[in-house]
Length: 588
Image (cartoon, rainbow, N blue to C red; front, side):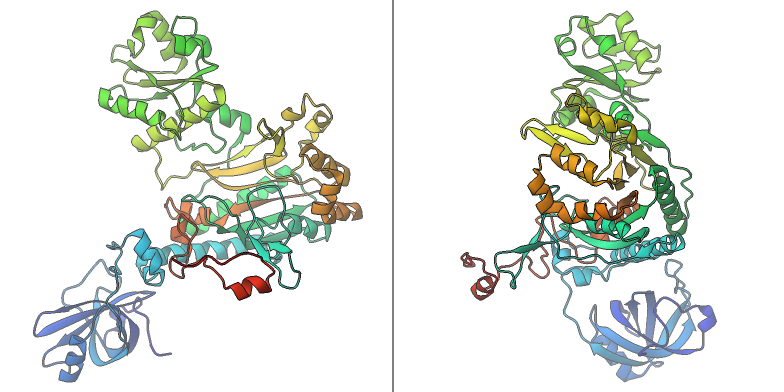
């Protein structure tokens, strides 16, 4: 090794020792007779000192030539610092430099390699290898590493086997768009990159590997957001000879273990909420339960008083923003503008204040007596000082809009603390959803999800198909879906029936999934599983909104890697070799 110690480990008990450190120049300071260099590596910072008359003139001259990010090897003696720095773990010591070697000089970086940098997102993504030198980014990747190791320890202790599944697979019509890969050896044919290892992990259950997991790359060609990337990582798991309760208990244990090992937090037992209750109380199948502010349906309370907006609405629903009666007209106008945003979708907002005497004053007073307004207050459980916020309109659209308003109020009131964690299971999702524009049913999760056993008979009646519940479950933490899964279909006849409901002909089902249907005829055990979004889990544990900060080399919002300029065009010769008949666009 070129070093005897790292830049993060030297302490007072090393004083007097001669050591060799290597790393990058974080900063330099010259006070004439004495100069300092702060050296950085992955492990921390150490101060070097060079004093006139103490260190050699040659070494001092070398030090004057240094710039930020020069790569050095330094040998010297550990000394106690006169002016200690309690903000640095190594702040009690410094190195009296005897020998200094420049291993590589460096250009001036385009942004500061500091915790608080002056580089914007685009610039830092272009020079990601420099951004990775910064403490916050490095710590994010260290957190990711720690979580991956904890996942493996827990699952290994539960007798799971880590198995790698193929990356070049077959394209399927359900789900998001596939990334496709042309095959040179099979002209005109294409592989797809996996959106998940779903069918392979089911086949592993048929094979007798009754507990499988994989920390696996998955790919989806879809529009991007802060919590989406074209390539992402899942903790992918499957178990055989289990029911839903077994899977919930096993993976609740995994998340409890991760919180304890990585955060030192005991999250306790996860509560469970049905999909129907989540939509009714929060307007959202991934509710943020760090705060209450549940929905109260008010149609029966407010309709019939001559206010046309409420009287014509399919649903009137409200929330109680406690202690917010003091909101000014400007603040209320801001909330009204918020719900009218296209992405929220409401047409307006009705509000009512409960004053210190318990009287209710609303924005629609001319339609309601005080006696009627008091019914609002009672229904919403209001106290003096509370603010009631009501929306009206089509049921699904109105619940969605109020869900967004509830989250906005939670943010404004400081109720969405990133250091507070409220996990839960959401269960009993609908198996299918009908899209009018397509004229057919789609799988709410995926085509391999089993119906609840007690709802199986409902599949035989066209009038009750939409009532069938899935044997499916999502884990939600702080309003983020971090994992989801289901008990799978393991019977060929039931799987064929599901494909039929989803619009597949027998021939199409056999062509796309014949390998799975055939496997079910060779003794498929009951099985089910779950996949966690590993990037999302990491960002949640790290208190960040974006998963990009926890991926070493992420893509931007356009799906591009601006550092290596990818995706990029390929040559006409490559296209011809791949039997792709198209012109290569000329670069402008």
